[in-house]
Amino acid sequence: MHVTHLSLADFRSYARVEVPLDPGVTAFVGANGQGKTNLVEAVGYLATLGSHRVSSDAPLVRMGADRAVIRAAVTQGERSQLVELELNPGKANRARINRSSQVRPRDVLGIVRTVLFAPEDLALVKGDPGERRRFLDELITARSPRMAGVRSDYERVLKQRNTLLKSAAMARRHGGRSMDLSTLDVWDQHLGRVGAELLAQRLDLIAALQPLADKAYADVAPGGGPVALEYRSSIGAGADSVRTREELYELLIAALMEVRKQEIERGVTLVGPHRDDLLLGLRGMPAKGYASHGESWSYALALRLASYDLLRGEGNEPVLVLDDVFAELDARRRERLAELVAPGEQVLVTAAVGEDVPGVLAGTRYVVSAGEVERL
Ligand SMILES: Nc1ncnc2c1ncn2[C@@H]1O[C@H](COP(=O)(O)OP(=O)(O)OP(=O)(O)O)[C@@H](O)[C@H]1O
Ligand SMILES: [Mg+2]
Image 1 (tube, rainbow, N blue to C red):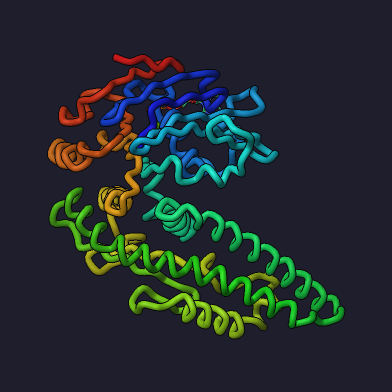
Image 2 (cartoon, protein in one colour):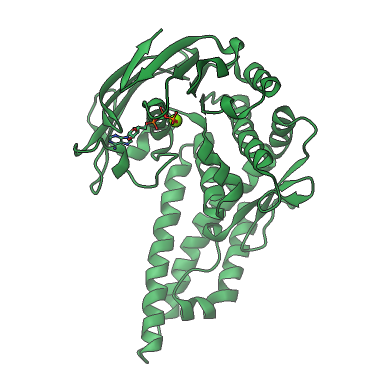
């Protein structure tokens, strides 16, 4: 798929901007702080309902405005669609498809697909487990948009189960009535069912991603690998053994039973996909804490390139977004990366210095300056 037109209103630094886009490569070039990343961030938002830079929507709305609108025309094969999201910080966001009546924001997932690489991705390697869980879950959703429903079901069940545990913990501390454990049993089953589905998808994803990540790392950092992706599950279900959803359900339920006493004491759910991590290994060591800055950066890029490969291979060609990637690479690696991504259906690149973008990526160029986006 590719985006044929991007239109923003009160998004970040833009009061209004219209950007027609071609398939192939488009480079946004301009000095620091001119609004290049803001453009690709908007495209990424349509694909994930979140920003790769901030966790809340408020900074995405232009200072002084009270809502932002991101609109994109999208072409997939013969089919064209118009998606629109209205961001209302503090209130529910709104969404429309093809100007028709409103749909849930979640319903637009799958129309725009992106794989976005940005300097913030260093946190994939160096950051907390939550960063890696988000990476996995966003990719799961890109592979299969219905997983957005599973993810939000999991969040909801987890929240309700935690509320129940918290009130049990409070009651215990204040010598109140002990809780009715059968209610907890019901929530265990909900958590087990949805959690097992999420787990199964993550494990399947990691198995598919592993060889691609290894290959991508070799492309960006020749001779620097190998890389190994290993799922660290709070219920001991690693990617080492293939497990069915039923098995994962049983494991999750058993793990919940095992920690039940502590959970009631602490008032929080201690096992499940929300406590898991993806271990990133590099030459037999964990990348986190061991890898150099350059290696960590290459690793993050390799994970994104592997994601891109995976989605393309499955017929879900996404838009590839490379935010500020070329400045970090030496000339040889720049050329390699450029050759790798040049055949993509649509590649959006940002760079502060035009010369950093390799010649093979000659395509459409825009100059971004003080909120103006002008085609060269
Ligand atoms: N909500 C907002 N309202 C108004 N301006 C904003 C808002 N959020 C960010 N900005 C402005 O947008 C600019 C940053 O834009 P952006 O991140 O796209 O820059 P860039 O061109 O990618 O720069 P760099 O080359 O440094 O990455 C900053 O000047 C910032 O002040
Ligand atoms: Mg930028």
